[in-house]
Amino acid sequence: MKFQYFIVTVISLLAMAILSGFYINQDGKAKVLQDDGKHSQEGLKNTETGFDKEWPLFKSDAELNINDKEAGIADFKVKIKTTGKDSKAKYEKEVTVLEQNISGLKKKINEYKFEGNDKWEEFKLEFSHKMEVIERALE
Image (cartoon, rainbow, N blue to C red):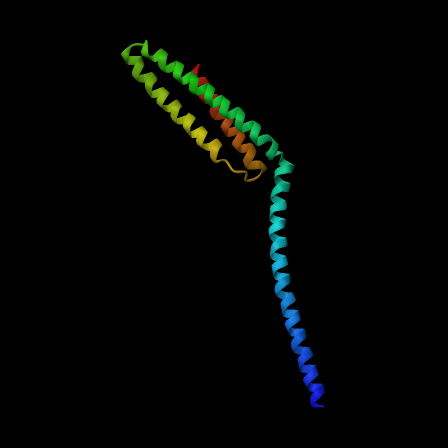
């Protein structure tokens, strides 16, 4: 009888050890699967919206436009030198504002991170609008 109790006790302890070991392993697997799921969902969002394809084109185009606007500002500075003193002060203030706007746009384009399709569309519209404002000011 003692031998049967001993076997039952040993089997119970082994079963508990094995089951608790599997339980810990299951938690680890579940955590890994959850992390993989987050990464795959993020990749799915990017491919669904086309952000991965559109972003490099948008960024390079924006940087080219910014460089063109900077060249326009440099030309404007040259023209300012030939004007009178009264208009020179006015134009220099405008140039300062334009330069600040350009640097703000550079900062935005370099720091942008994808937060969803709606935010991406909003960013593109706002960025394009600000570029148009700068372009009109340079004319």
